[in-house]
Length: 223
Image 1 (spheres, rainbow, N blue to C red):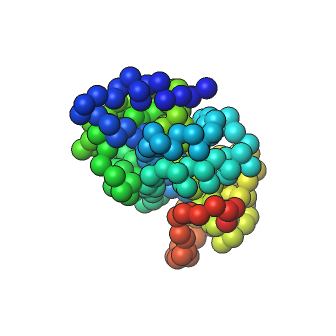
Image 2: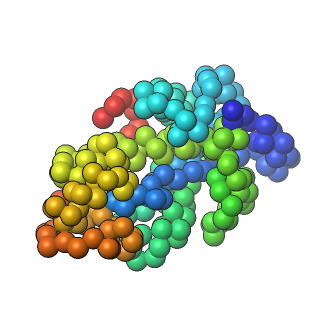
């Protein structure tokens, strides 16, 4: 169960604002990679409740915790678009999304806790924690915000491209998703450089992408 033990150990006279960062969508074959940065002030800890890694939660519980987190914490969200994933690579794009999340946080971080073993090249003091989303409450909270945000985004994209089932698979390479690509071709939201997509033969070509007016979730709800 995640806790604030690591955050408490790392606090000092010069380190008081400790922020958790996590990303979602790294292994998807469609859609952006999304990162969230979360700072949970000590006075708000009692309002949050038991936070777990987003992968361990039901969608309903994730939404409930998302509402609590955005109501009682400082948070920022960052997107790296498919074109940026294609231009750089997924690792670099994930770090771009983390940078944007931290820039959108609205508070200056003294130390940033990042899930994983690779240290992003970012202008903040960074500490990586392998399995951080199951250890640090700050990282676990970030994983929830990132997951709910990206899932909602993919549901909006699904309204424009319902044949790919993004409301269910969230852009990951399920068997049904791969069959849909074979039948309907790739969209501009698919990561064409990813091997599963690249290997599929297709005769369909998408036209210009639909411009979607998508807003990051800032209030409670399922939209």
